[in-house]
Length: 225
Image (cartoon, rainbow, N blue to C red; front, side, top):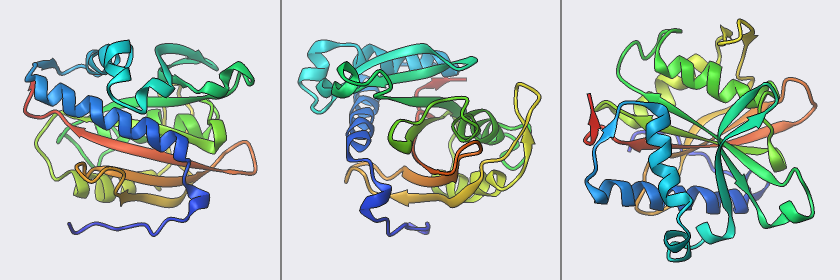
C-alpha cells in the first residue's frame, strides 16, 4: 500500500477506544457478510450499525463490545452526536463517554469545499476541534461510510488531508479549521482491516491536543444508488 504510516507512540493511543474501534470493525464485517442492501443515507447506515451495537447477544459473542454501552442521536452542546459510547467508568464519572461521528463519502467533488470529503472535515472533524462535541481522554472517532468505488487510501491520506488545512464554513455559518498537528495516517488496528487511520488536532478553545481515530468502511457494493 502506497500510504503514509505513522510510527505512533503509546501517548497517542487510547487502548480503550481502540477496543471500540475493533468492535466497530466486527460489526462492519457482519453487515457485509449479511449481504443486506443499504440506502444511500448516512443515518440509515448508522442505524444498521446500531442494530448490532444494541444487540446484547451479539455483543456478548463479539468481545470487547460487551464492555460498552452504545446510544445514538444524543445531545452534545448545541447538536446531536451520531453515536455515544459509555464506558464502565461512567458510574463514577458522568463524562466518561466517547463520541463517534458518522459521515458518507463518495467520488463527487472530492477536493472541493462542497463535496462529502469537505463535509467530513468541516461538519465532522471540526466539531471535535471546536468543542461542539466532547472528547473524553482527548480522544474521539469518525466512521466514514464509503458509498462509491474509490481508492480509499488515496482519498483519505490525499484529498481529505488536503482539505484539512483549509478554513471552511460549517453548517452553522462559522469559519472552522481542523488545526492539524498530525495528518490522517494509516495504522493497523485489525489485521483483517486496512482502512484505519489516526490524526491529531489542536483543540481550538483549550491548550491540548485531540487524538482522532478514523475507520473508512467500504459499502460501495451494497449501497443502493
